[in-house]
Image (tube, rainbow, N blue to C red; front, top):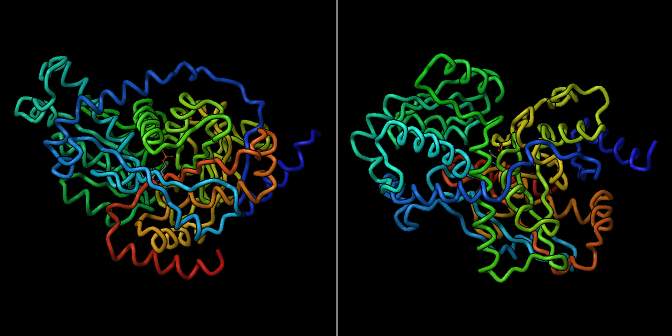
Length: 446
Ligand SMILES: *Cc1c(COP(=O)(O)O)cnc(C)c1O
């Protein structure tokens, strides 16, 4: 028995009881072969977005003001910080407002759109409808459209990834089909159907929807399946966000160094989005950035995977799911309702992730309402998972131990805490009003 065995046992108990907890990664993890990636790969993804910007501006009128860039603001959230009743001397709360990303309305605009653009680019070059260095608006002309129309893009999704892939694929002229899990919201399906995307509904969970989509495309030589569970292109599309954030932090006058730590709280489903972003941020800021993933108490698939890899889940199978620890994967945070972590994200995060915490649904709704009332922002429940992170860090034994072991206590008054709000822009008003009233009734106890 080591000294750390007692906290690990307590964490396991809380995990199984679906009680909110903070887990921090032990230092023992070993680097995997995935570590061949560098920031250069994220820069390539950012450069691809740049090449496509003129075309995206042509395809989506909403992107005219940004000249084809899909980006979100960095916002100071002083009123939200006050509403959360932080203890004094803990630094400042900021928001990376991906809930407001155009085209897809969620963080999936980064990874999902990047992967479809990469596929379109390589296909167009191969088929000769695009020459290297040419203006990409040629892809909106009949020869390229005809080429794309011969191909099908498909994906399995709990909702938001399907929205992103379906919208960009159909805008480029691909046939698009989206396999939705049972937890996908009706309005997301309706939005896709209105754009001519084929929506296939599945009775099972996210994994089942992915498996069904993958199987259907296997025999289609002109089919391309976006595989959220192991796609490097998705991952690097997310990683590109770190480069933009670096510029935004600099422009906002926010210093990140050993005496000005940056804490980032990232809602996590399969782990691709938070993993890609954390990867990019670690490449840029090294040990001065602290990345924590946020998961629903009933769907903590990344936590289960990380604990298992750390030897803290006795008897767990190789790639464990939340069902293996007796949880049910039922949550209103549909963007995070995933039973098993992405293999790729788990491998890359093995040596980079700082911790994972879990959040009860009621707390997400309460924070959604708090954010609305304090800052006037409209987010979906998944996107609220970031806001309980700082409290976990300040108040839990695991959080205190983390700050102590890294000698961060003296610098906390200069800390920046960044909650990544991951979705919400296209939530219909009636749906948002229901979130809000649930949030106000749970705010009393949260
Ligand atoms: C997909 C999603 C996430 C998490 O992304 P993963 O790559 O699945 O980890 C977080 N929030 C929202 C709103 C999402 O749609």
